[in-house]
Image: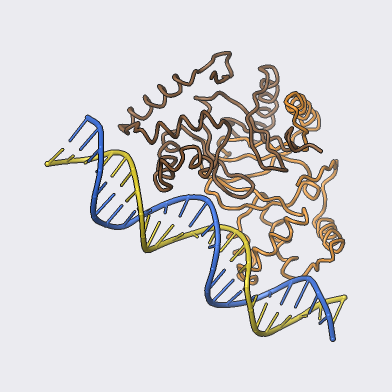
Length: 157
Length: 157
DNA sequence: TTCCTTGCAAACGATTTGCATTGGA
DNA sequence: TCCAATGCAAATCGTTTGCAAGGAA
């Protein structure tokens, strides 16, 4: 599910926490210590992270099954967005209404994924093009994601 | 059936077959009946397909393990490109040098993925924007992929 | 003959779930 | 108290692999 948003400002760490708390309370779901720990770790790590990375970040304080359950819950609440890397392993990142609309730079060399934000004019351009093309096919557009493949700064010859 | 290709060039079904054959022979790998069957099915199905879809298409003529092995081989030879859908299940499609550069319409309702080709001017616009933005981050762009999420014609209210 | 390819079944790894226990409102 | 949340272990599911049989060069 895609939650539309438009922000012109960065959202602070504390704000993210507050928003997550509210979203969960709306769904009468508790924002427990373990869940807070996970959200905080995602902010720290930045970009789409694997369960393994999260597990390491929380230092085994949260057992594997709970971590999976937490991620399923966060995903269900629209707090995170789930993708899969080249190996098919799940990667989670905070949703766009928390982090802002952005795209991904995927390094074909080291596999690292980092976020990139387009300038408003650029984003508008893409939006227009995508909408025109898809609408012509009778497809009702809700959002788009761009993965830019190439070599990151570290992996250039 | 004619497959559209970006630079106003059309590649026929037979041409795809020929190109695949050549690519495999370069790697001294046989283009066996089972493998031909798979490539033909991918052309028929169109868009990124799952192993399950392929298995059905070939009517159990190819056992599961062989199918997996064939896909691994084709992927390795750069004939197919592997992605993963929302459920984490692998999806394969013929590579862009066979099908032309295109993007994807992903239905959030039924999960179907279909190909969409942008008009040359549109593609150029996207290319420019992507390149500008990524280069500014010190990232050397090799390509891009756009997933357009929304509702397909069948799944609209 | 020699090496590639196939087919079956067993193995794997990521993810999910059953069930009894804990803990917060 | 009562129900959500947790933790462990067992189960699931897509996918991979070992090994022996089949086939093409």
